Image (cartoon, rainbow, N blue to C red):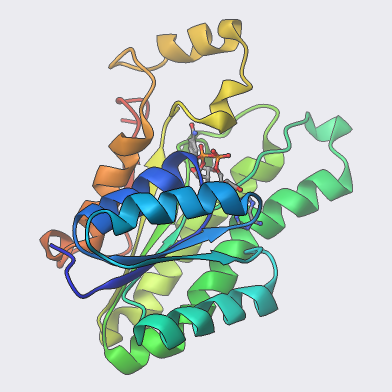
Length: 246
Ligand code: NAD
């Protein structure tokens, strides 16, 4: 399905990013596994992808740092000659009530979750325009639509990602670069592991399908958006959330 394509997946050493990198590799893409922290985990993902007979490369870059992102894109083009798919997945949380939220908690989440999407999107644009081909998929969140007490920084960033997706889609449409977003509900990853059992129970009561999602549920929809099956879609945000937002 994605044979001959090159994908960059940010924050791909674990969770949704890892599942996405593996899913794109399973479908024939060569994959750059971006990571900020553990090289070992990123290399494990690279090995899993290479087992499908495609190529993969672990590249360290902090998505909040424009220079590091540009270097990552250059390394990708040097290695594979092109960038067809960018999945902006990297994200963090630093939750607090607004009255207690420190400026550095606000800045860190906005810089990674929103500016990171801008940095990576900007860095691949020139190459994708040259190719007259690109598929960018941004990972937002249902809370970017619904709001969530205690997550002002995260919600503002994710709502921003949804708006940025629409603007990038409009700016880049005439170069055959499609930009869509996926808004996960609550997915079982290290990020949601920190929630207590009480909170998980409360969340389940808001999910019509009555179960938390798995990283693969998100990866499958990202693979769809990266494929020719989604060729007539741009600027959309797909909620993959067990029915939370409807
Ligand atoms: P996770 O914490 O398991 O993975 C996040 C990944 O991003 C990690 O590998 C981390 O190292 C990486 N990362 C963090 N900061 C980075 C940076 N500055 N540069 C590069 N990489 C960085 O979380 P996850 O649940 O897999 O989340 C993935 C994405 O999905 C995030 O954008 C998150 O906001 C979003 N999301 C998750 C859920 C959920 O329920 N898990 C729900 C909605 C949205």
